[in-house]
Length: 137
Image 1 (cartoon, rainbow, N blue to C red):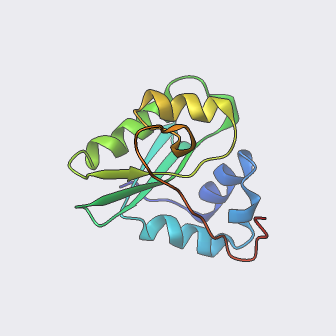
Image 2 (image 1 turned 90 degrees about the horizontal axis):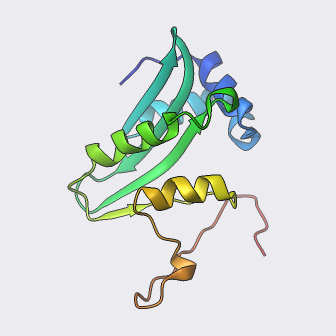
């Protein structure tokens, strides 16, 4: 796993508008570094993409983040990062993620074999979330 600096991680998260993560920069860097696995994409040494995962390495793999600098999106970088994560955890039974309501993200995850639980017909699954200090009602 690539060595990461505080400035480049914060810069990447800010570039995609994920300010909830960047309000405490040191905690963000620590969260990435404590992840079970992370992969990066670089262009001439500059961080342009990152994906990170959490897992017990047996029954569940949680895809936490897939980020690509806006100017570098739509060039297959996100797919490559996602595929590296999926390959690393190929042996794990459950693969879970939460994502925003943006169609381009949905296309990426559907292409990787993910399904929106809201659209499942024959599988009785539900997804629940609790986000600290957020009113989700």
